[in-house]
Image 1 (cartoon, rainbow, N blue to C red):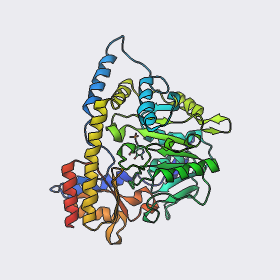
Image 2 (cartoon, rainbow, N blue to C red):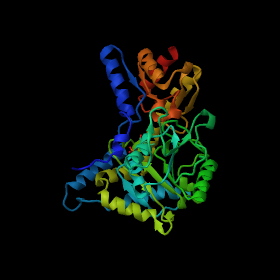
Image 3 (tube, rainbow, N blue to C red):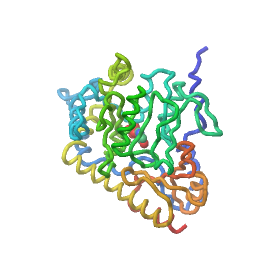
Image 4 (tube, rainbow, N blue to C red):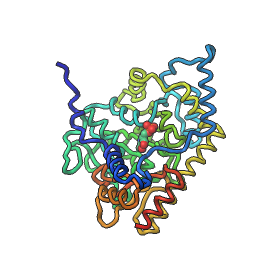
Length: 404
Ligand code: PLP
């Protein structure tokens, strides 16, 4: 008789967004006359930029012609795309990343979930709390997290780094020593960032204790402030301790198109073994490449037009973020995020729990957001709104919230 991976059974309950969807569906059925505005999900809404669409069309046409047809892509991704990444994402920021340190993928969700595979089963992970749930759940599946307590919402073997108003929504060095540290800046869900000096402290800490930092920079394109680092490799010594994950989802609207990449410097080693070679082996064995047309579309993001058009999209979302942040602040809410990230993190009023506020907002303002507690125990008492809606809906949602 076959056996299952019992770790999957440890995963608690249903997924946050399906709980939200159920509540919203029930509300919609009971109140068909109400217009519900969704500021809950982290998905983009603007269509792909014209430069991207035109590259998609061109690449699709190439696939229809024998001489230009493409089959499997090279293991690491097409060189034309990796060269652009090395040049525009790194060299332009004073960082040298070699082409064979870049692994093109179908997005940061898979990379952030899969990266733990190249590490030992007894490594201790440290995560921010609240956290993008994939980091924890993928380690649960791998059996690295111990036992879940529904009372505390915590795993016995996970090191939680609370990110609350008390810590300025940044993690502090944990008292227990971790082996793998997941950091995400700009942060989902809190929208917070840390400056370069602070990130340098994390790099120094990781190098000192021999930990690896898995740095998720999926929201890098939203950084607006000067002293916020765009890549962890801006910090000295990061190449010996950090893996960086990037995505085309939020900088260029590729959530449904799927493209991302992971950087693993060759200097990042466990003894004599380079993590780059382990990931190359893993990537080559388990992944057959992002589609050619998608990589060609990704390359268009780096053209002058592509950059200009995607910058305009980000500006559109960040204007929504401003509307949300300023609107809520003017109504007396305590709000953070929304400056270097498309997420606004608000303190729920009147000591409501995150889910109480969710229900209240849905019922009284017909606005959907995401309960902070869904991202971890320290998210309790907070609530996430996203800037990815339309401008008109965002304005209307905030007007409704202000009237409450
Ligand atoms: N990392 C973070 C922090 C995210 O918030 C998301 C998506 O919401 C992802 C990764 C997933 O990105 P992708 O669409 O590239 O899989």
